[in-house]
Image (tube, rainbow, N blue to C red; front, side):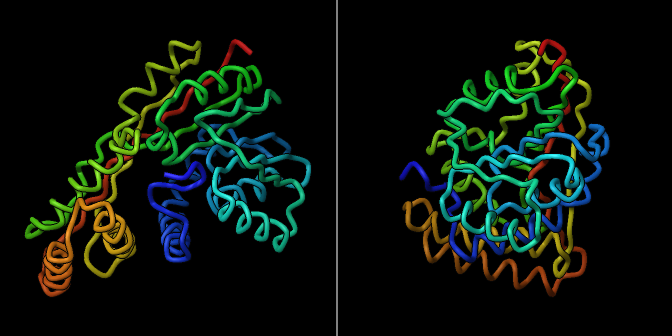
Length: 272
């Protein structure tokens, strides 16, 4: 895989899926930032900023007296995020090219670091975690939304093909060097680096065909299914079976989607 290419890609379709995903999860993100004490004027680090959706929200919340630094691997996403920041008139938002598996984090005394669905894709966590130990101000908060039980993903009651898709997706994440359930390890790894673990809160989403949760998960199946076929982990025949299950679910009263389970991890750095 190219060093600037994600497992999930950076196509226009993926950017739109991420836009839908961000809108769906924005209330949870805002609540997490509030619990972490985010205030106007603070310095915030957005780890793995993607197309910049969270970075833009954070920049609005810290205001012109604050600062948000978004670190992002993909040149495509950086271009999208920088254009959005300029269009929104947010000079307090800076986007930098950065590889979280290799590059040191800037030691600039951040009050908040935010990371969502990024650590799960990193082949090595040490550069990120060691960097957090150095870049946070004393009393700075780290907030991570990462999966703790990815295999809760599913369509019920008749989703056998979706379940096979989920297993193929999970295997592809592992084969790329990631850990889909990385938040089973992160609390202990942060504690070993002197962070105080303040909160561990599961975040679960369940949806019904036609609602926002279902649209998000269905779109993931459609888009990532093409990548799994390219990898030889799935087939067009399986793709057709999944499409049939999704269509049947829209006609079945009581059908439901269950999203992979996220764990909100909040920790404080007191040793800076």
